[in-house]
Image (cartoon, rainbow, N blue to C red):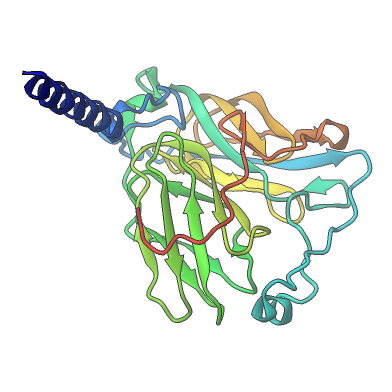
Length: 296
């Protein structure tokens, strides 16, 4: 009798443990809570039809204070990187002549004048061409990049050494894939808007990049002169966001007239730098520094 009861409770405990583990490992992508205004636009809204009255939003990103000196990157851990990436410096803060590079600027929310409808209620044509992130000289190029939700995303390896692409999405699934030399491009898609997603190489921890995912095409990255341009914007009133990995984000209200041009200039103060990169208004914790051999 005792042995029978013992076997019963043992089986019962194993069954409960199995069910608990299954529930813990379940809850796929549909369980992720996505902010309604993250990136504006929808994939299933009213198809936007150009009226010919679209305009342009331009601006410059200024940098106040003492610009940090370029920080050399020590790549001696990998002989290939040390040779091909010789002389590389950090891209975390790239400021010159009072202008800040690598700032991601995008329309977060707003109302289109015609029909007085929120921009989030429109669906915009998806580009057929992919967006490519390259690994060259043991660096991610470009450092900051924008893409549409569900647009094809390619990661290429132009280096004669292996890399590891670690994409740490919040609203989007995480994935972690090794890419040896001469390997075909890694092809993925980001299914939800999210600003911004950090990307790291676990094998070369100095390699970092950020991708902004939106449901509309109104985004840009500031160039070396701090300038940016948003083209084909419908007339309306919008909330514009400028995001930087060290200085956080700033917002501005912009009103664009029919066939008009609006200006939005931002200034980031060098004294407000964070000790950790910022993404989704949260600090980005360093990824685990070990290579993953398989795609998750």
